[in-house]
Length: 109
Length: 143
Length: 134
Image (cartoon, rainbow over all chains, first blue to last red; front, side, top):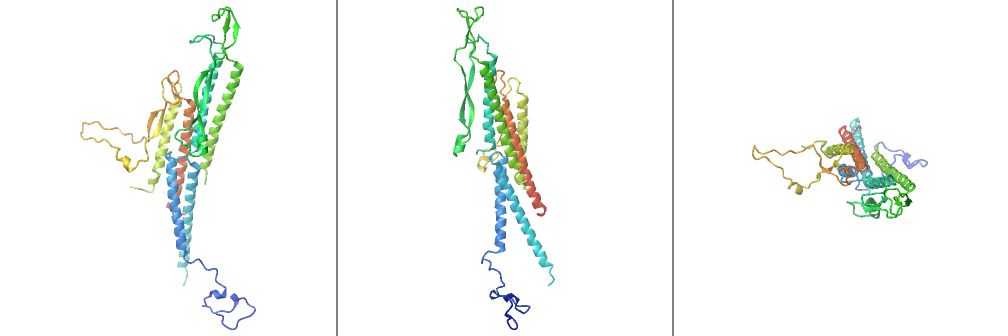
């Protein structure tokens, strides 16, 4: 809610406001609403689950190739590389989450 | 699966077949003048007979797997064409008319066969090297 | 007791197997002219045994001190057999140089493959062990 009279020439986001005012959807300041039900925890779980699945598949394929039960060289190499990249993705996400946590931790309230 | 090792096995069967062929050619060329053999009569030139055999351990699951086959030397056959008759009355193996039957070996023909066999052998070796190279580059995926 | 590297045992054993096989095949090549020589080869003993199959793998135990012990080749990964498929020559030598060379090439390729797979697995473990920094 704007304090004082509404300035006709200003955009809605530039109208004078109180410091502790929380913008509402009517102000046009909020971004698009996120999908209800999909949270970061879900996405993180999916990524880690995929890393686990790829890791098991790749290891099984590699052991089969090493023991001579399989002849699929390029398929196994691609599977192991995919698994490695997915692991690095999980590692990067973990790093970012930890960094974000410490950044908030360090904030002076 | 039609992988690297099946390709090497197929090419290796070709190498063995061409080596057998080289052996028959060498035998023909060495015995081009042999007028007496243990079976009586002059030397008869020999040829290998190749056949295509399906690869073991492989059921024809896909059309490609059914089409790939190994080379097998089925048998070595003697060429029954008569050789040339040469008039040499003093020859120990001359018949009553004084003619000696020489082997049906045409040395020029054998030389051509030898070159063909040698080139086929080289082609088989190139094929093995090529598929080895493919496998090595597959091992570099992601490096 | 499983360690971090228990999953790498198949790669270790495969490398051992292929190195042993190379030695046998190289000996075959060296004996290409030896009369009555039969080329030898190495094949894997069953590495994938189900618990059902393991029931039938009986080990001999010494129940009396005077019984002879059983020699087990624990370092050997496979079973040595004679490969006579190339056919024998007049001198009883069964070595075909093409066949042995092809086997050597295939065996070397398998060794290279297993070595690369081992390296990749170790790199993954290194990445995880160094707190996902490398």
